[in-house]
Image (tube, rainbow, N blue to C red; front, side, top):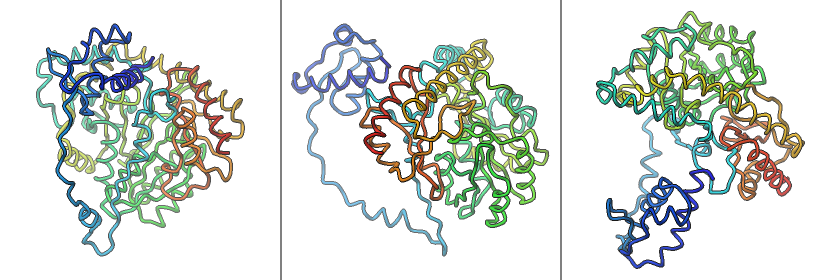
Length: 477
């Protein structure tokens, strides 16, 4: 059983048994719970911590866990309705709403209920994460001299050099900033490149987290459609002319959610169009290290074709490792680099040095290339299992493109499908899927869903998840 599910199951069983104990009464010892429920000590510790967070138990180091005393009646709730006026007020003559809508992001961050198969996840399943290698790297990093001191504001020089080499020679270490994950890097980039109220061109569909960043900063996302060969250059040029935008955000490799790769003949066109518009291209190279086995050579980053400092490049280690391994590179050349650096310093000072040291230890170890080879094989197997199951069980769903990298599939639903109803029906059937609507900055032409195969335990779970999805489709369609 997955550790997360075990924790939830044990917490629920203990929750039901709390009435056996009087307030302040002692629960069985951790050892007794381990033996009774046949789970690990870590599972017991986490389940008790969950109950403590809910205010149901109190843990006392060295003494054990006790049922919490009943909560005293609190004071009457105050009136916070005034905040609606304050948060929406804007002194400008033509305000741009700075809405902060994280629903498109939380779908892939929230853990589904126990027993629900996770087709909505945005990270590798724990069985695919290099947990032992990361733990060993963190242990070694913590013993390095000065590991807990203040790092250089731009990041450790050796780590910046490693990222610069990985971008294909487009940048030097001096052009690289270390940030706390791709989301942080994109936030810094958009804040640096566009003032509030400005338009920003985005692929359509695109990553909801980036749309949320733009809107929270008061920017106006303008969609530019993509097809299986990436963004369409003629429409990109039209959008620059129509809006006067100075920023275009794209994912040229295994785009989220379509999986598209920017075609070779379009790469130069995109850079030429942006250069003529006096605009920056933010290249979110988020899953380069999640290529599938037998995919063949990957195209280099778009930044390698850029001689004029048009591209601001983002690449992270998080997707290829684990959600909490938030180490990313933000690279740029020219005057914009100083603005990026200043905004990052103001926002977060620096990425914790132990995490940077651990990243250096990890990528420099023999375990790192082994991990990437293993992930490449496993992702291909999971992708093939999902595509095969979908074609057998749900031939009515349209899968226009099967990517050779990344961790998800993008499906178009039959005309007239209620996307929200299908997502809700799938959850009732025991499988969590991601609705397509949050991936569009304007009205979509059709209903879609995104299915992740990387967050699953394996091919058997994928097959079962598709069977559950078929049941939901029968109910809704």
